[in-house]
Image (tube, rainbow over all chains, first blue to last red; front, side, top):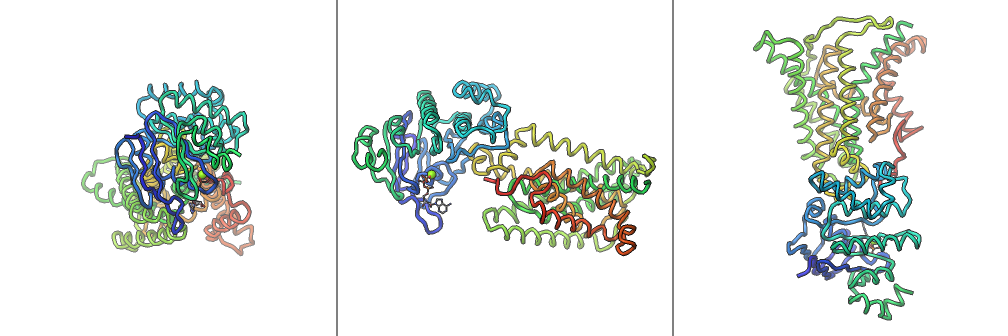
Length: 235
Length: 309
Ligand SMILES: Nc1ncnc2c1ncn2[C@@H]1O[C@H](COP(=O)(O)OP(=O)(O)OP(=O)(O)O)[C@@H](O)[C@H]1O
Ligand SMILES: [Mg+2]
């Protein structure tokens, strides 16, 4: 049984069906990725998984439990966290306050302090800028903050929505290095990415989403070799 | 010169009260983008509940010192207003959280009218005189007279505002409130129960409104069912003047509006050659509101609207 099991998931905005019945599985300890063009329904899928959107149909099981209808603030207490698209940094809060918000679901100051030290170890730049207003960070630093903040919740399953969006190539590799470390610590990842090449290198299994349906799926190696994937996403 | 100082003192007293009420508008607006037009009525409810408590208790416990009575009245008023705010949020606003903006606005006006009428049924249409519970002694200050009640009003308002700033900037609840003000969805992803934060904002605003209601009635010695309406509109003006959604702005806007109004009341007649009397002071507030909305809609300390993610 996988940590996350999605069956026949549908998401609709009014009459518009953005996700049209998809199945996903994310086994514990794995990194899986979801790739697809703009508007394919990737963000809509993640929002449904994290509880921000209620699915129009379909089932979501996390850790064996049906989680449809459970609000995000309760899911994060069960270890299901998400770093949202566009980073979602609290620009007027300081870096430290953003990280403290990440630990909002956690109790015990010693535990939170040790999470903080782990995040600062992973992203030393954040430690240097802890007193700075987060809105003044560069795009890459904000992305680090978004990841660090998600880790403060000590997730078991972390949903990542395009963590390299708008970053320079050097920052993109830095983010992927960090993700590799996070995965190495045993956190299960479901990664949404436009950068299919890097995503398929990190993940062991991938799904290709097209117009709200899973067009292709398979191990990262098979997908990376697939002519359709090569043409559309690896160009 | 003496008039100037005197009006300045009066303005600071009035402004402190406006500031406390303005904070209630700004806290809720900051998080939900909702203008809670019923907020002013809580000032009225606070004043009248406190008055009823004092009237009930003073014959029962004749030995009780005035300040204890005042404190008890204020505490009960704060509790009643807090419960009322929770009820209003739950029944009138929460179901409309995702409705178009006009819907909760109209609801707010409806709630305001309902509260006024309810108060009229309970307390009648007449003006109630508020017994002087606190020393009415007056002190000379730079050529102006200031009563002990007024000193108490300003000191208590300053204390409450300092406490609120501490709460917003130094506590977990305050941090969550600021996070919600920036991005509710992300705050929810972090584990924040947004409804609880919204309720907290309503409750804090209601307690401040209740205290403000006691202050107004103590300062003027009067209370009646209609007193919250104009005061609420003026405090809203103060919040807009300072930059609605901004806590420091509500304080600054309240103080400035109080001072402008008092000075206006003192000088309007002279300045206009007798054309406009001091009773035009109420108009002044709305003149300020229009001026701010036209020239600087984000207010003095507010950030540009549209920054909200
Ligand atoms: N709030 C909304 N209201 C209406 N339609 C929406 C909304 N959000 C998304 N959509 C539509 O749903 C479809 C899927 O959008 P979604 O954001 O899930 O795509 P995506 O795969 O994340 O795209 P991108 O790579 O650009 O982030 C799109 O056609 C989009 O226009
Ligand atoms: Mg997206």
